[in-house]
Length: 335
Image (cartoon, rainbow, N blue to C red):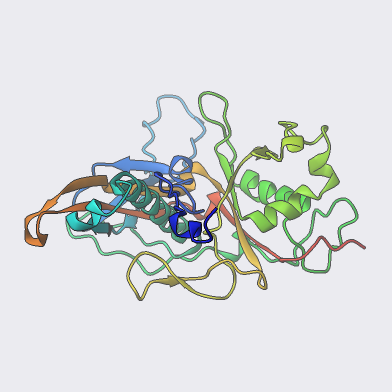
């Protein structure tokens, strides 16, 4: 065979586009209170506080008039969009048509942005109002109170020999504490189908620490007995949602909002946040759901243009329905 045969070698290229690893869309949208079709520069979600009946102590008394407390939580819309272009000359030089892959990539990015808004509502300040006028002025920022925050050193309900004085990752004891705090506020009910309204938002690192617990691995404690498949999706009444979008106590990452809107990111050297919350603790208002357009741009030589947009906002509706758990990024410390 000729020594020059190598010049005839060919290269074969795939006819498919592979999307690289990423969170594929929103994971938290179905875990919160959703209201669609909103209009206006801001929306107020109305709330009603609990009341109590009065005892009847005499006959023929006047009818009771018990004033029901009303207030509101403000939601401000945030606009997101995404666009990319495929030049016609480029399409002639490709084995593939990237339009569908670009579109799928855009849809997943919009879903992640939605989760970022929800996580921001879990962690950030809420704004409320008691005004009933047409022009409503929001109150000052309402932070998550200390009673709803668990430090990494708080291990009141330590089990399996966990050290109660040192910082710990996510443990069964911390979940017991979070469930106790939610239960004490009556924030642990179920929906009409008997499904839990409680959710636990956790990253892969903290979920791994939780899986090392003998209590979680025990069939007596595990409700779904699916750990052998590496699938822990419900425990202690919490529906577990894993996402790497939850923040840490330090470090910043620019989310896909404005350049000045920075939030902590997950790193391997800091404490991680984990959130336990009730569905009605977070409100997501949608002005315009995800809209997709794929069309030609006459101003760009009729190149194909892929465009996505959405407008939404989120707020914490009730502090008693949210528990923030700070967790050490280290193995369980046992005494």
